[in-house]
Length: 304
Image 1 (cartoon, rainbow, N blue to C red):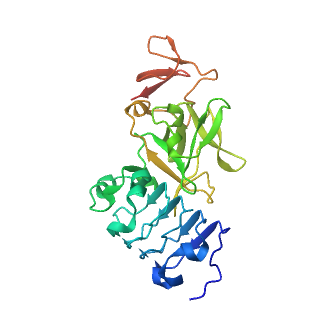
Image 2: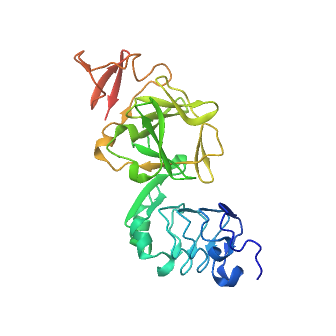
Image 3: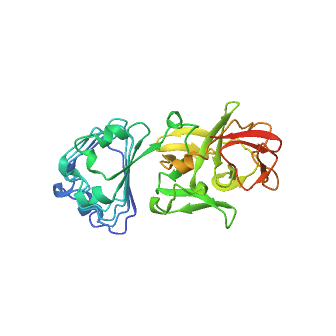
């Protein structure tokens, strides 16, 4: 087979839309590394792909992350051999069948495996997927998001995280999960619903995520602002920006989950006063929201 893309070491992104990625359909049955070069950082797999063949991505050392579409049912021998993947998002509720040698031991030790909410047991107790040391549940569809749970907000395109930046009083970006602190309320988000509308709330800032310049993730506001919230192919679309997809990574910290806010009248009032003052039931001013009933703008806010 002759491939005009062989050794294209400067190629940055490869998009694959065929139904099956079968290794012997490519150059000398040795996968994409010999075709496109081993420096390609991003391979985008189409949603119609159902099978990843033997050795397909073997040697693609430039690959640091990959999304496995929900339709993939099997992954062959050596499919990701010698890859330096740090983040892997498997979108299927049911784990694909995997050959034992599809992933290297080193990759399983270092890679964070993200799986759909409610699927942790399915992957953790699978005879092949259990080898991943770090398995995290994510909500990539609205039906998987709980209002009684806090999350980290992850961009599924580059696995970066959006957090509250108190220095600049706005939304900041952390490039990897290693920089996120689940015990830091500034890194925690909650989905709230009222009157059929959706709101994204940052626990630490006690502010709402709002659109700025027709984009999402650029502004926070004391005042609630309904935000578009819909399912996309690669995650949740926030604010109507269809070029971006988001996953809500379940927060496993007990501390962060104690910050959950319920019973907020999003339609008629804010969760904070203009000067950020919060009071307890005795009328004493407190520094931040506490577990139990708080008084904000004359309204009772329950924190569980």
